[in-house]
Image (cartoon, rainbow, N blue to C red; front, side, top):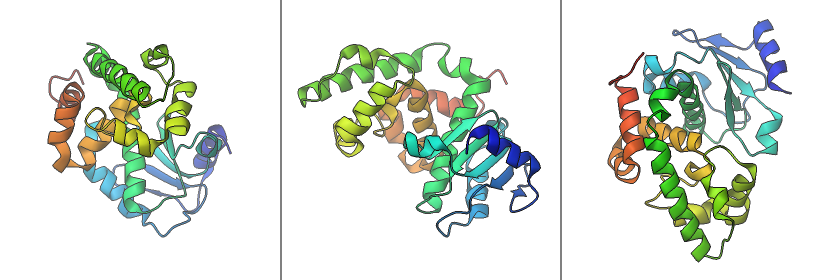
Length: 229
């Protein structure tokens, strides 16, 4: 089932869906395969993300999309709706997926603030160059030009995910990126940092040390500092 079909189902739904107090429409296109209390998940998400960073998302759809299997995704954001897989390990896993996609929704109204001065981009590309050197020295060789593209690139994604592997990558990029998925693209660099900042306040100092420019932007977003909202 594709996103367009899921949107039609949401618009016509009268069954196992609900609205939160803030007006978020939560819809099930497939039941969860594990015993996760979705209401608790959504409650935690809404308590974690301040209201001014939730304005773009109108609906949350739980189910299955071709992209989830084809590309190994767990969730995706598009046009005011977050789509998240019905296959979840536990509550924490589902909260993580949803908060990550809220990060992508934040990019729409605040894109210029986040990326306009190029500070996050420059920080990201510098880390990418360092990562390329580390991988090359570890006999994972691929053209340096592949690491210069800030946008999502399937060839690079496959190299990092399938050739290197996230377990190995996580060890190699410790102290450089906060997770193995962060080097994937500039947008994922932001989204992984956003998720880390909101879900793990006890690790703020590490995030600030590893990605100072990213931390500064997210901190300003969270507290509405110097934003043109």
